[in-house]
Image 1 (cartoon, rainbow, N blue to C red):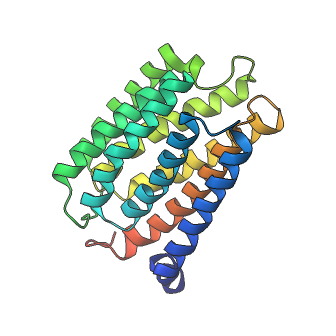
Image 2 (image 1 turned 90 degrees about the vertical axis):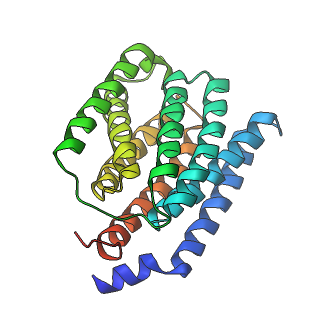
Length: 231
């Protein structure tokens, strides 16, 4: 356990992970997009910002991570709106709002605490909010001819992300368990979309999600064993 904590807390891991993520984003962007359009650059910048944001949050950097998260959410919102992915556009607005709250409420170093009853109630509320979003905009998340099993997995992953984002800004270590679950489900979804040839750009999101999964695993060890409160 100490070895894993030391590994995931090291700058060597962070630098290798970030370098691998940026390289993967650049290569997949060039292979995925046709030409160097505005969306190519906004997607590239937004994706790299996404890596830096989740890494900062995993390393308990509350002010920096949440502040940068507001900027990253703007890029995500623009990209998703441009692609017509309205559910993810609303998710970007939600993420931006929570990051803005986090910028004013989180300390420079996040103080990790356990989830309480109020957190459960609010999590239930934001989960219902996610369901409402999917009810009205779920069709825009994935291609219309997508198999039902991919859609249902996407629904569960989306709700987990909504709840995990709230718990993350609240400084609750449990958020990273939800992020791990959501990332695993999203890997299944993007793999299915790609191999079924329903969405060629799914490989781009697949690579990003794999990187996010690795960061979520890192965050579990950092938040539980190196935070202010060991849970």
